[in-house]
Image 1 (cartoon, helix red, strand yellow):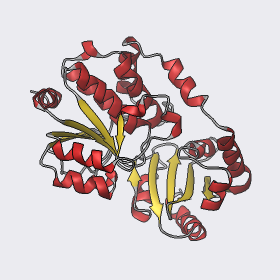
Image 2 (cartoon, rainbow, N blue to C red; image 1 turned 60 degrees about the vertical axis):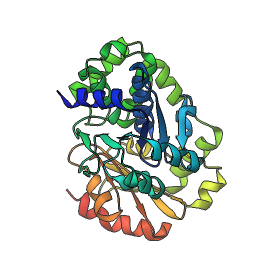
Image 3 (cartoon, one colour; image 1 turned 135 degrees about the vertical axis):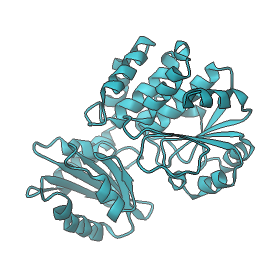
Image 4 (cartoon, helix red, strand yellow; image 1 turned 45 degrees about the vertical axis):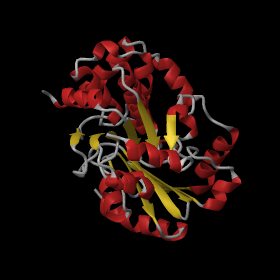
Length: 333
């Protein structure tokens, strides 16, 4: 029995299924969760998605009402996780990625746990681990689950649309080198199942607010620093600057990719002051310019070679100084 058939058997045997994903939701964590939920429903079972926090605004055209949020309804979330006999851990390799509240619940739960993830160095807390670091996204792995458990016939647009979205966003619209032939094979299966890819692109691209564009314009015109000796660009935004432009979650999500589009740039780093810490987004081009090591070794983070995240408890100014001091070490070649 392959591992995906084993997972199907666990789904069919379970009574209370909970789907979890990492804190600071993104397209892949939301897309893989919704896709898995609808697949489980096709198998005649029910499940609940329980995420640490709300999805960014650009994803709200999806039916995110099906997602129970721990930060908004901790009592119900605690109840669901406590009663679960099967818990899916999607798009995270470490139990700490779900935040301290959910981490303690997962650690205390006696439910069988299944990890499906594509990040490096998975922890061994789950009972079943699907860790495919060469996969473009966790959403791609959910398609693998559907196909390799011999259930491709149930794949439809309701399942496929959030999965396509997850692959799209985690590959930078298919530009990252994580895109492999298998990625396009999976995309073809989603299109054949009725996914209207052009509508997904429209929903993502035609989703700006005036304040978001003004914030991005301010960031590009006033806060962009380009270190041409290393072809690295940096943007820093303080909490006061974010407040001035009525920042909401998701408003800066594309800034790093936008900066990376400057001709000749090897990497882009954007950090924003939120909740008393600096949230840092790293993006780069090519296998020769990995940013995950910089994130892991100096900013309590990690991720993929060309897309990583981290954090800093220093001030905006101190974080900027630290970043600049490290650039020569990682981008001198």
